[in-house]
Image (cartoon, rainbow, N blue to C red; front, side, top):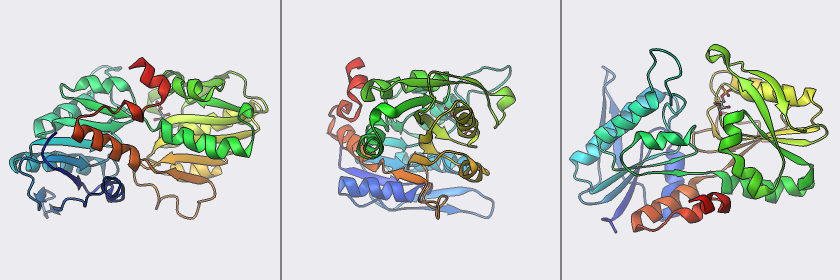
Length: 327
Ligand code: R5P
């Protein structure tokens, strides 16, 4: 058991940080972030954190680079303020799509972020649905990667499968990577899977989907993906599903970044409902479109994980049973 627990919020997603603190039954720690005219940031920790077990909640939302630098300065301030242990709680991990050197002369920015976090003072990291799980290996400190799946699957069971029989559904994976990453949804829900055969020429926001592998004709198609950025993947997937005879199309994604004109594109698509996580601020973006968007609250998962990290107990109960079995 570490010193007394305290949770701070960076400026990226105060609503989520507040919800996590509420679930933990603690007030948010007090801090302030100042931005000077030369654009330099200063973070001041207003609570005493000496020998305390500190959690800083900061997600990767626009302005992404400002928030990243703020995280580093926050960690540094906590270190200088004598915190006993510092956990960076990063619901959506910064630069998570830059996870490999698959072209000449490019950076692996997610690894660089890992090194920066540790250099700044992080003792642990708590995150959710990494774009690729091997990002954990960029760290030499403990990394807990939560999965949003239990909350999403509860929604599927409690809402979708009451609207029409579960047997009518097929899970559609956005690409081959998603098929590997989210295979446990099919195990847990006992549903068939279809896979989009997708590739992205030159980082284009309009990926090419060559075919859909699996039977989607006359089915209720539920697309599962980790994130929605430009919306290109979903729009192209929905187009392919429509052309392949899908009867209904729904989409679920943990991190709804919704960059650029993603919202407009999604609203024009045949996708009837978007089931989203709240790892990034999304409520204001979708204001007025509540009939097509459902936002699932993931704060309880983070709060439970923080409780377990603080008390030194296992977090395995937070994972779907089939993932737990592999542990
Ligand atoms: C791809 O590898 C991911 O799983 C997502 O499909 C992708 O990041 C979504 O991005 P966008 O919305 O820009 O197509």
